[in-house]
Length: 310
Length: 291
Image (tube, rainbow over all chains, first blue to last red; front, side, top):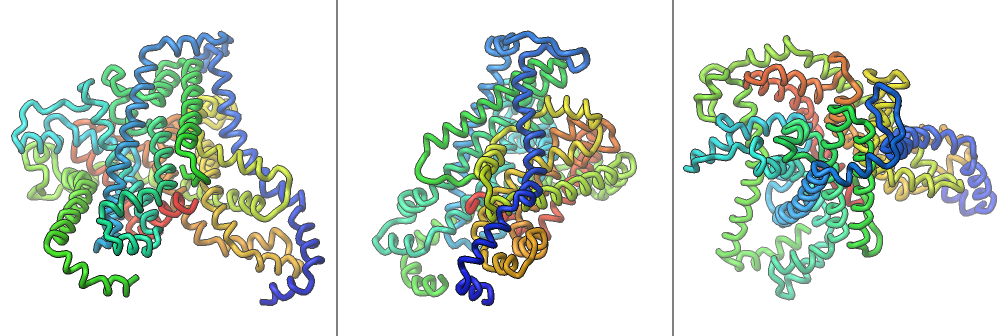
């Protein structure tokens, strides 16, 4: 109370004093510079360097050698690299499509379901586990003879069960399933929160006008949470382009590159084959693709203001 | 909300058998989804208590006659799980603390103080959210190598703090903008210094959003893989995530040991979840919707 009174009485003088304190250069520098220097050194300088290292031939032991755009032109002709780009894009499309599934579950969950709170917590559990633990667990699930998946398939009478992770035709799908499983709770919780934010009166009004539940879901709820859906599409696409941990642990990109994605291709080039220059060129390409994807999706789905989340 | 429901009750009931059947089907969908999410973990628990023979011969979802707790004993004594656990705990705690403090400083300066480059700096932090860590990996490896920080946990503290700053600032921003300024103005009028104001008034007032941001940071740091895997080579310096990965490599044929290792590695985060599940769920929802 005292605060607002003093403001009322002495507004001019106070704002002046306030402004003086709040534009103290020393304090601003003290508060901002450490963080700013940190992200410049750890995020911004490295992304410039990665483009620069891409111009070098370099095995991390002997000195770098400038080779111009050789790495980048090699990249353009490298079939294995484009296969990894294709796999990343497949993941991006599949992750985006799976959002519809998550949204459907969230829609059901948000409709006055008893136990909704407990259910969404259960859905979230896989998301909390490390990708390493998830990858190791799914390696066991996919085990051709002892895993529960083939065990189940044999139990319902399917013979010739797939070899999953060692079959080049199946491996990409097999790697996607754990990703679908892992992220379910994350997106369901985001959608659920958005749906619960919709004012109840809107839905009630539509119901009184005779709209069915499906109509309400598609015509009223969906447009109202479109901003959130947009954010999740960016998250799903950019997240897919960056997938690494799970694939690296489960298959290492194999068999024979069949599940290689951009990030694992980069990692293997640099840290396995010691081609750090070439790996950097891939890393730079990955950066450019992620920024273009983010910008492109925002552009395509542009309305008024965007909400961000990573 | 409640009264609306009770008033609607006659209408709902008249919507009859078909309506209830529909709701029943939807319920089954939700429960099946929950079972799918949990079943792999239940199976993991079961095979962590079996020996190989029992894994191969008994049905997948059965318990052996004798629970093989010795699997847990084996991996706890043979491996360095206790060591990894400690590394994970202190690296996570320290980097979360640094991130929260630094992010609060920046958010305060951006939302409260007047300076010309404010929006440019904010932009730099926000763009940082979109930059994939993989694109920074090789240069960071080289920088840490030259600074003699490879195989040092300091490299992890630095990278975790830096990469968590943008998202943390984003979570804090919305809260700071919504926070009424009267208290702060009054404090300044009373001659309180900015530093004192920040530590005594602003930090305590933002404690709820700090908790949210801290939890999200914690999950990220705890599970982080690629930096530990790249920067740390000594076994004794590894975190749980990466240590477990290497340890399992030695036991490729012993299912019980692998199961026990995985159970031990996920147990801490599951316990935290049991204690803080409401906050975690809120944090994830708040981070995206209110952002």
